[in-house]
Image: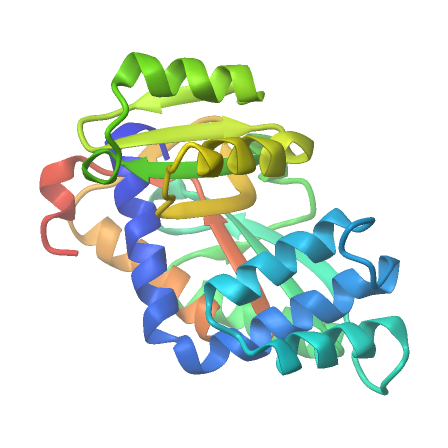
Amino acid sequence: MAGHSKWKNIQHRKGRQDALRGKIFAKVSREITVAARNGSDPELNQRLRLAIAKARANNMPNDNIERAIKKGSGEEGGGDYETIMYEGYGPGGVAVMVEALTDNRNRTAADVRHIFSKRGGNLGEAGCVSWMFSRQGLLVIEKEQTNATDDNLLLLALEAGAEDVEVTADTFQITTAPESFEEVKETLESKGEVFTTAEVTMLPENTVELTGDLIDNMLALIDALEDNDDVQNVYANFEADDADWENY
């Protein structure tokens, strides 16, 4: 998802998350619970820190966060989930990765397979597309929300430890190594920068350009996957021209 089209793709996903607000708390709580298995102290557990940050970004009450942590640490019952990654192809040959947290592997596999089949895709074998993605921190700043010049923000981000800064007509898209994400984010926040997106995610190394009905079909597949209660995140390597995004 390169350049301006990457940002359009992210905007669509954020819009979908708003539409699925009723499910967000349940999904984020599950993510916190699984992360807390490796330690209930967020200072010592980066995955838990990131999950809590995501919960707060979605306005989850502190009581919900604490309850989810207690489930994961064993203080309260429940939370017997495992992380599974599914890989496949969507319309137009788009590579798709689906991250799920489930307490029933067979149910989730059947549901994900059915969604792929019904929406014009197919579920593949483990490793069939994961080589096309890398785990990275992503920070997006809209130009209308910052007073920094292109050169100044580029220099600041790189000095803070960012790997790259992609400048588009409307945004700065900053990528980091996962372990550097929080340091870069905190450094930029200390300078007054505000992020439209701030997450550790899976970014594609290459992309497939879609047009017309293929965009509709691909977004329908992503929406159907995200509607599933067990699915936490969906990653895909498609992009489209700005003109093709005007209807979304």
